[in-house]
Image (cartoon, rainbow, N blue to C red; front, side):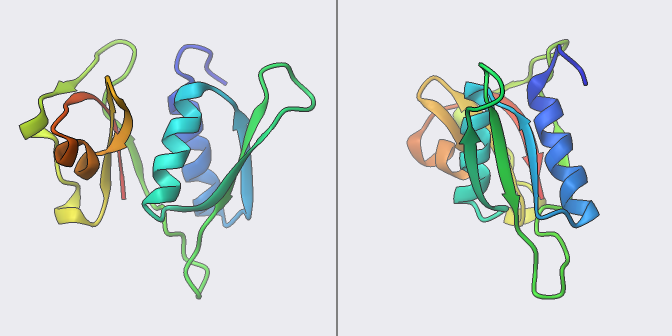
Length: 133
């Protein structure tokens, strides 16, 4: 597991568990990770999440994955855009739409972490963390 980019580890773990048909996955907790899973939940890509504090001082996030009636994953692909070696920032009018609105972009703004649509509605830009579809 990489220690340089915990957000990428979270996103890839959730994507891989979703494609493997797992009911849930546990990942190390962080403030950014908690904000990202909250955006995923509010946009319907995961069922729920819970922070587990026993076992480690940092804690873990248990992400409950979401599937269709025929057990196909709702979250199919996650693409990390901004990474530690190359940060990508977007102004409020250039926040991308992912697959004509089927997916979402997750943006870290000075006001918090939001989906691309919510960042546009609030009139803020920021670091384009990832795209999810």
